[in-house]
Image (cartoon, rainbow, N blue to C red; front, side, top):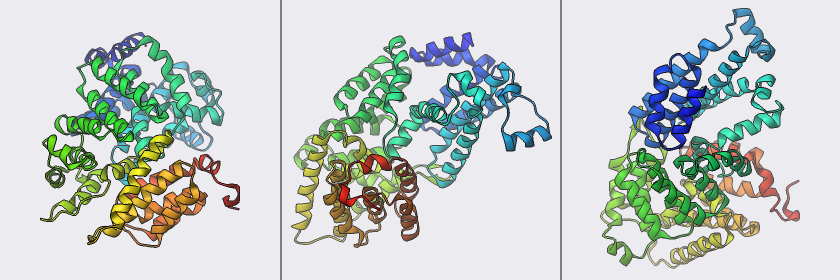
Length: 486
């Protein structure tokens, strides 16, 4: 354990390869070395998204589970059946066996996190089952007390909140759920590491990430830049910072700075070139044409590149790339049908409205942009074939801004304006957002699932519905008493 603690210190001091080298020789004999070694590979895979790194991480996790298994309590068939129905009694475990249970559960969680990077329904099911198995291990009362938790339900939840402050859950919450979480708990977990490793890249990254989720974008930008300057060994951490900086500036509608980081990503990162190029083109679309020309960019040509940049992981398309390619199809024809506010639409796709909603003045600014776009659409003399979809999109985004500002009656008008006017791209999303205003959430999943099929980002919307179910109370506080449902 002392050697593994030394490896952790190396890792948090930005000496990533030294940490791996220290852990590698004993990874098949020690559960601590195994867990530490695979943890680093999992983080690397999550940053690069390279198939070879994903395979290496998955392989290492499998080996780590086998190593941990060697130290777990050996049980016969009868005892296994008894444990299945009554759960294993911690009192029967030695201290080493308790350690093995915890290490095994942690590796299972990491395997689940890696599985969630595959945004298919199968990926979610596999990941969910692994999390459930890990959760069952953590619910042994003595193990919780061994960790310093009381063992009740709230303590089990706080343990998983601590896991939720990690990189994978952070991205999952931000893009799939509702962009929220227990930020006080995350800050408390981070505090001792900030003091010990003030220049650690990951510590700086998480400090900035928490600041973003709190709406402190200027402070977050400073910390992301400090993170970039802190090390050169893992360039992928720079790419994570570029992605976050792009959004931090987008929330402020500082499109010139947002473009700078989108451009860096499109040139340096291989994680998803289709998404990066689309995002770059979407941000440029928010700038005046003369500025785009000044930057030497051609928006139409960028959108036309998206389809050819798509990847397939294990033979399957990546949902966000598929969505981007579908949107970019407008630019294939000789007379392109321009997208309206595409950067703000991507902000919705990545669930940024909940984050920017922490800053009412910035939300008002975005609302102003949408109202100008609404006027332009209304005054079009020769509406295109995409006119109705564009109107639906603007109403959805307007409704989101109004909802975040607490102007729920106006938000309802925006959502209702389009629910009755079918738009295959946005109607199911409108249904969810309207329902979130009035908390008929028990029906929302069934309405969206039964009434709408095969629309863009379907599995992601279903995931958001479940996330929203858990936070109805935060919206309920904003409802006028007369509109509170019975």
